[in-house]
Image (tube, rainbow, N blue to C red; front, top):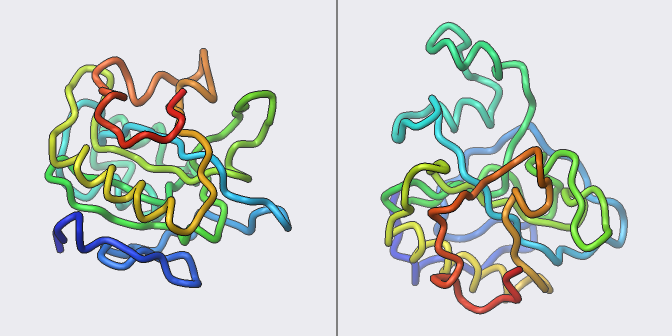
Amino acid sequence: MNPKPEALGPIDQAGWLRGAERIPSPNHDARPPGTAVSLLVIHAISLPPGEFGGDAVNDFFTNRLDPAAHPYFATIADRRVSAHFFIRRDGRLIQFVSCAARAWHAGVSCWRGRERCNDFSLGVELEGDDCSAYTTAQYTTLNALIAALRERYPLAACAGHGDIAPGRKTDPGPYFDWTRLVPLAVD
């Protein structure tokens, strides 16, 4: 499924986006009561590192990554992580966790003095790395996703993983063009 960006949305009461492929991840839990979603965190991932395509990211977020399939996989296969969304190089959008739940994407993090960013953020992984430009299809889908999310959640800012976990993370990296995003208090 590769819907046109204009076919995305709305987000239903359960937190699932119409038009996104759904592959549920077990790696999530409840947000703290009364916590509003106010931050969008942009990440980058490629598995194996520097390689695009295949199902390794899907397998990683659903705890099915085969540690014997690649030497790098043996070092991460036991981690339990996820993101709400994943945007492939061709713009295809996959949702792993309901927006109503806390996906395990940010790890140890802090945004404007507020720790535990998973509590109040949504995580979007782009298929990419620190060494490659992102595709026009990815920016198009990301902007459509942001528009759908803003209809439902009081998003106040957008930050990179490296911004909320400096020194530990660098994504989405130097090739991510922040000027290509729809305005959303990008910091």
